[in-house]
Amino acid sequence: MNRIERMKRVDSDERPAGRPRRSLGAVALIAGVSLASLVGVAPATVSAAPARPSAPACSNGSYTVVRGDGWSIIARKLGVTTKALLAANGATTATVIHPGRSICVPAGATTSTTSTSSASSGSSSGSTSTKTASCANGTYTVVKGDGWLAIAKKVGATSKALLAANNATTSTALFPGRSICLPAGATPSGSTAAGTTATVAVRAYTAAENEAIIRSVWPDELEEEALRIARRESNLKYNAKNSCCYGLFQINWSAHKSWLAGIGVTSASQLLDPNVNTAAAYTLYQRSGSFRPWAL
Image 1 (cartoon, rainbow, N blue to C red):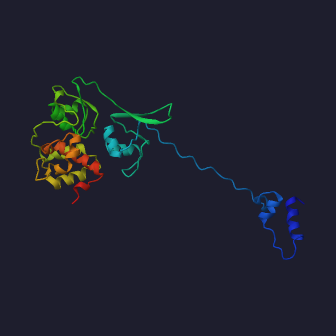
Image 2 (cartoon, helix red, strand yellow):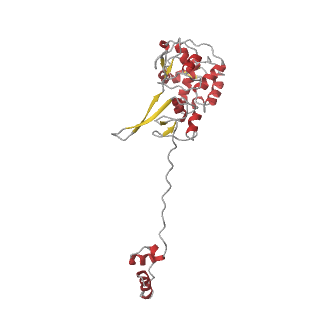
Image 3 (cartoon, rainbow, N blue to C red):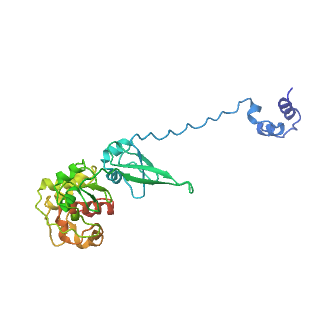
């Protein structure tokens, strides 16, 4: 008879009348064994949780998200469409991204981003380097509010020549700080630095040209709503104005002139340039985080 059987028998034979029977747990404690051993049940086997799958390899490089980034903003930085960026990461516009996260760069991006580690602090930071072609006719550094058409006007070249010099299209995104090539015959002195006023006469623009400008500035997923608003506000007339509001998106000069100066718009008349107006409208959208400024 083993120890467990003896304890069971003692509990049964020597228990005074009226005294409750010891629980199995108590018998196991006295016997110095586990309850599982007492009842003849093998201990349960705990299986480790499956390992989290590793992030997919990024064949075209990666980008480290920084504060203020969103999918469309990153796409503009990389010179790709938002659709291509989302597809490269198996994401949607509703997928949340946080600073420090590494995401995949799609093919055709004009910017490569790598993460470098600090040996002393153990922290990592994203550094961005732009692929710069050899520019035989000089370069132009993009400033806030710039678009391909606006830059072409500044440097005295046609949009077609400027795009060809950079192997770009009107849908190729631009972002402040990027250096682009000037075509032959351009005048680099026509460039304006951030915070200064460009004094360029506004030529006549057709509704089709204004629509193309809007599509070139606004991200793919926002452009249709932006066009709807511009049609409602100005009927796509670049020179529409009234006592308070100017241009395609009818921007209220008095209400917004304090921050407009920060992107180089220092007079209401500049908002009659569809390139300037469209860039200002997109900046206003980013500042508010929605189309709320145009809500009826």
